[in-house]
Amino acid sequence: MKFRYHVLIVEIFLIIGWATGQVPNGGFETWNNGEPVGWITSNSAPTFINVTQNTESHNGSYAVHGEIVNVMGIYNVSPQLWSGNDDVPGIPVDRKYSAVRGFYKFTSVAGDSFVVIVAIASPGGPSGFGLFIGKEDVTTYTEFVVPIEYFSEEIPDTAVIHMTIDPIINGNLGSTFDVDDIEFVDANDVVEGPSFLPRQYRLEQNFPNPFNPSTVIIYSIANETNVRLSIYDILGREVSVLMNQRQAPGRYKVFWDASGFSSGIFFYRLQTENYSAMNKMVMMK
Image 1 (cartoon, helix red, strand yellow):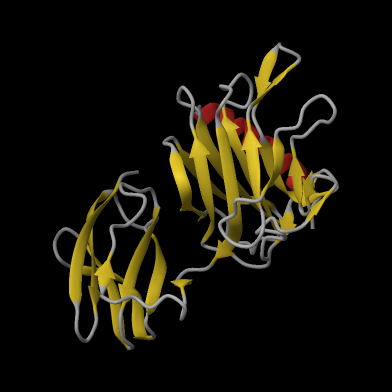
Image 2: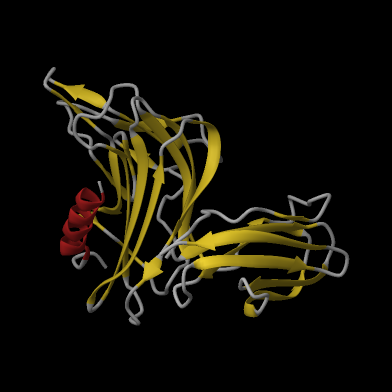
């Protein structure tokens, strides 16, 4: 499976340079002739249509729905979505976003997977990559996060977000996804703002865990307070400080890029004026 994705990424990078940043129409509110504006779909009317508008959304009025369909009784075709316009995948970006996130529902038949690929390019060529694979059924809109790993010092200028069901050909009828609210995020973005006021402090388990090399840490604070979020190695040495400032009540998300560290067990500690908690996580390269 990894080989197939690597081939797909090469194909994306071959065309990404032709494209010139928040995700346009990331909430799938705008449609034209049955197609989501700002996105390229696998629809090939009148032969088949496997990407459609859905009124059951996470936010707003609409989401996008994808399902595997049969073509002429011969083979099954998975839905595909690429960010971009005029049949050219790619949207402009002007900095190194930490991740892409969104909300999805998924019905899996016989092991089919929901896949999100993020391919980043700079003027000099490919410069970043992210991958999310969901294998389980998800019956209510659930957040997914695609951490982006960069392998170039250049500032990126183009990003492609590709969503599909694996396998692309001859998957299983009945496998479907619904997606809404796709966006780029920077480290330390607030997950939920003033409209969401936690009643208690909480440090959640990082995701994914184990991870390589990036992971997401989410925590909630109930009152305005000084917040320090630190990473410790197995010997108890503080190796990174992800947050050290005063924050308003809310639920926060922080990304940790551990590409400069060796595989092993780490601990992350949240400390405020009234609360302290620590969890364990594992990096496996």
